[in-house]
Image (tube, rainbow, N blue to C red; front, side, top):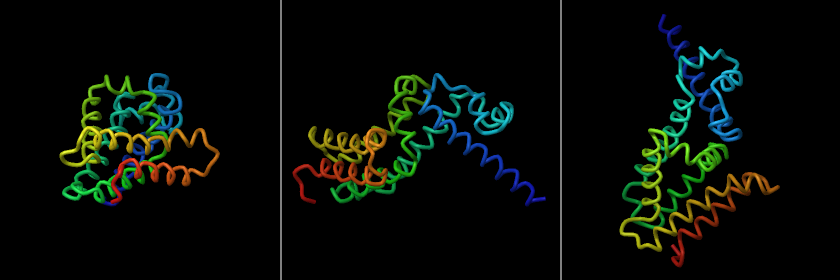
Length: 194
């Protein structure tokens, strides 16, 4: 009996995760406003009622995508902890964020970039902004100057350009990510050699 329950729970979790993945792709490529629950259910190969079991609205799907994302970013910042007092520690965090983003696909960056106003106006928008601000403060380091804070923001934006560059460049996606990381690290270092 326990095995059967575990199987059902696994399928439910799998459907939820697949719905988040499909929702991410459709929201990024079609836009949040232009994507319906019916389209997500059709892509998943399930009924709208089956999708409704996991998510009552497309806002719930968007919330799941973005809150999972911010949770992962917050965990990276937490893990970095005291090492953020050093440039080396902040570089490690920037590398981890770049690796995480590369693994999540360009859809996440595109979703946020192209639907920023709609996301900001949703109930969880403030939490997303707070998580983003926390990451930028961590990359800047304690007692950062204005130049240091701008440097951290610019380094983060360089990482974000990997998603856009993948659309523009004919280069291998891995090469694009490595190039944007190299530039981001140069920006973060500024005049410091390490």
